[in-house]
Length: 464
Image (cartoon, rainbow, N blue to C red; front, side, top):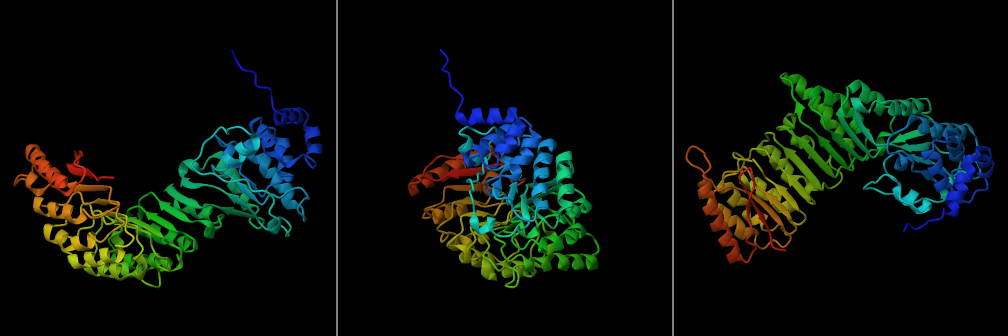
């Protein structure tokens, strides 16, 4: 037997008003605040453009989280909302009822809509925003530029009708509109179009930058001045950069790029894949003039560095609070192990993740850093795959890391003795060596579970 759920008063009011839009317009000035979100949702999903336009002009909250309602961007509903904003922007004084100062087009705000409407919103998001009621410190002052927040993932595919309409609307209203985004992701887009879009964005709002495409060094040099204007960037990720064969021109581009790091005073996370242009030049980034804030995460991967680079890195004052360090694919075979030891000692109190995969580390180098490694009391994950290590040094490694209380995952390569002189892996021999390592762990009182990953790594979960 089905249970009848009678419509709520909110639903009845919304349906009644939307049947007679003239009545809705007249009622908005005196409509109780709690009725606005549910009525707006009904108007939005029913695409009642004129009602949306009128509601924007009387919106009683500081923020309108429109993006939380959009499963698929729809130009018609966006146009209705922006038309309402145009009416507001044309007025010298803010209307008595309206408190709107932020239009949020990001996929956030579901908690706001569900709380006020008493029902679940049709989309889900990992991020949420608490409802913002009247903020008298902002709303009683003269009108400041209205902020529009968006998510920026720049690829040729994002240049759809919705995005183009929004950009054209913002471009005509630069004085009265601040276009903001917290996270900028660049996938595939010409530098010309990137420049056009970013020239309309408040660059000091951006807190994270991801360049997920392969650029030439000259392209990065063109982008660098824009990066320098993003003074509040906290995380920066750069995909591989192709370097030209002209050394003199390359040096000029490198200076153009590294000089902009002087302006990134809030940088906390830096990840660079294959930054070959920085070989012998890490001092230009890891200097007291550049890093004003302690780094929390650093990844420099798949590139050559010099002993001088590693020395400058280990001497940098603002890496002493690192939580994550990734040097995967950086050849360390010919680098003095003492430099890596100094680096680990410097970050021992805070380091939680350490990746030294494919670094060409030999037994003698690993043995030199074992004392420093054993002092990393916060270390949770440690990976050293792809290095040719003997059974003897792996046993020492197990014993040195035994006292680390937070370590929950270690990833090791197959021992050197598992291979023939022709570097062919013998699975039977590997199984035997695994059994020996398991026995060592049992003697240390650890969990003895082991698994061999497809890359011939040995994965060892730690005891809880």
